[in-house]
Length: 176
Length: 447
Picture 1 (cartoon, one colour):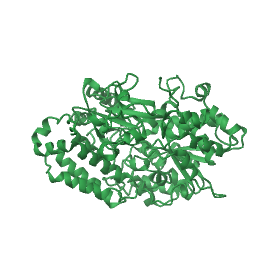
Picture 2 (cartoon, one colour):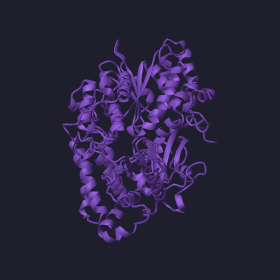
Picture 3 (cartoon, one colour):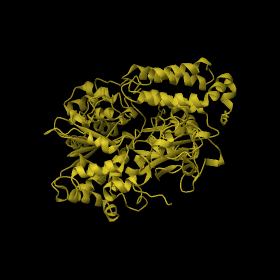
């Protein structure tokens, strides 16, 4: 059920949204009728996460200010939807689908392999801050499993060899 | 007879995701026909005649759903497309949107025109952000060509179309949870009534339809509702996208005419080409993870020995005792090496993870089922756990605001019903169950 991790709060963090973020956020808000700007909230959380890698409490407060809603309205949404990282994560977050159809074609073995390769457990980040490993429930690629998602990219038809190569590509900066 | 394709006919044409190629292959002709020659009510009438049933899983007639929409004066009405495809085993809408986005957009404009909506939304699951980018590009093309915006094709009809993402929550596929999410809130389903047709998005009358249902309006308007209804069998009309996965030689998205035999779909050369690696079929979940699992001897034949067909009725033949459901078309196939206990536990874990937490029977019950199944799978089960699962099941089913509770209960009930021996074997042989699989079950001999 939604998140089990607690949001992180650093009271000294000062958040200033970049111009490009402000522009994206303004564009999203314009899509909805007047007084219904709150509908832009989930998209704005995605924009913030793309910018910072995760969503901190001061970032949520700033979003509340921008949308002219209460901070709690942002917290309750950010903690409900599992795509939002409420704690710092590695540069690349690998989210491996673990649901039935992927399990039938080897996702359990894939997850175990990545854990060993990166020397971390699911939910942890490598000591160099490069990778966080997570599992996801059905990513909607059941015919092309096993698969993982990293930001906006789906990597499908994975095997142990392919995932090894993929991790190296991320490590070397060949994939952003 | 060669299988007709109404939605994916041009899917392999290079550049079909762009508006010029789409138009060259007959795209936006249905829209022109509707705007220039038909009234909104006539479009609704064709959809009613077509017999189209909701392609998201429930199979409720789309035309009837449309006719429930309240139309009070001076209050806006909305059409919302449910593109929150998250039912395990289902990946057909993603395929359609990614490959041929203008089909959905044309369907949205047609449907919005029929319903009298001037602003419509596509709510897409957040994980499909790259698909959202494809749709936004296609929408921008449609605006530039005058298919969206003010006075579309000189008809005086105005429409704005917006795509908006979710944030990773299966529950938002339930239509009232989707509306909550679209309003920028947690995806907690609403108590019904009032139904969305009366009080939906921002309290206004709203229709929520699945991607495939909306796309199907395009060929229905083009060919007429009667032509669409001529395809299929009985109340299962038209074509259906089936996303086939699991241990199949050729998994993927197929558009079938309803009425195709399950045998042909699994083993036919035009479709899945049998079980992967030459193995045997053990079981099948034909309509997404929420529908009952069928053991191998009930997949291609019904209990009465008739051929099982890909229709709403035939897949449900036998009820929960020996049938299942067409559901979303998420067709999951298990080979002889798969463990039913492990898979049932996996699905239970999914529902426990995805329960929104609003209703106690679902919030607590899905978690209990996950724990009990986990201990059976991991060699710590007791024989009374099987009855305990059945008991939890009964206490969830029908006692929750939305159908997620039922969706969580059914797969467990069906797995125990058909594979009780395998569950008992797991419990009696905990260490052996860690090292080998139970294998196929035998068809009961009817005296």
